[in-house]
Length: 318
Ligand code: ZN
Image (cartoon, rainbow, N blue to C red; front, side, top):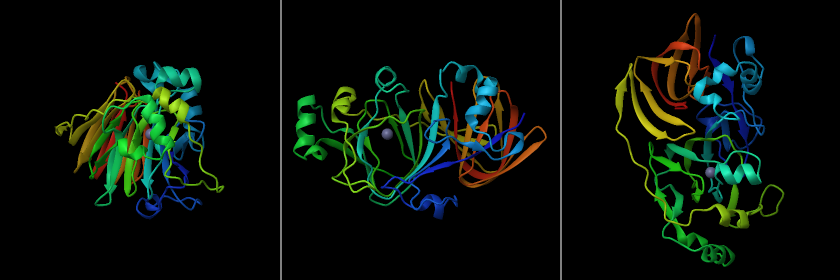
């Protein structure tokens, strides 16, 4: 039994920057590194493993051959449930919405997307779009897109490092320029683009909008604030519950010396190192980890420790 270190997959979307290369040290031939897919079994960008006997295999094929790696809670899902990304927005992302499971399975044949954002770094005046600033009708929704006054209806929120946003499926949203964040989401790549600031894609043409589908799935009420939770100490770590829903439970985990964890069969774990260096020990295997490293801990691994001075995001399924 060992813990799998993952090779990220990168995407060079037009709005991306270079912080994932410059600050995280990731290597890629792509010019812009907009997204790093840090835990992914999605066909559009699957992680491979870079250590041990499974080295070079995709996480998907390893899990298919070892379904116990998912744990009881992970096995309840038909497909691997989670996708985790690092996102570097040098420019504004399009204003968009994701459908819920029922709609997405029916129309797109994949999961819907509820997601959460954990702000890792941002420019001083950075802001993002989270829902509408008031209730609007679907007629007004369409009209404001058509006459280019859509942004007057959105809720803009200033952000700072450590902020958390829970974006339930159906919530209008957009990451703004100057924001670096970790996104924990359902395993889906279905996005309905509503407004793209009049930009063109790499081919010189405007990127496709999906207005009809967006109007069908968007929650037209103002977005509700998401509760902030208190930090607590547990097994050597300072933890804060960032987000908990049926698809994922996410904590920030800060460690000064050494923390203990237990993969007790209920769920796999993902640990994504955000700052510092760490040494993970599980049984007789040791893994050195640095900023940007992501590991998949099989659900039946048992106890393991991570020593060092580091900050991380920890994800499991409850
Ligand atoms: Zn999104």
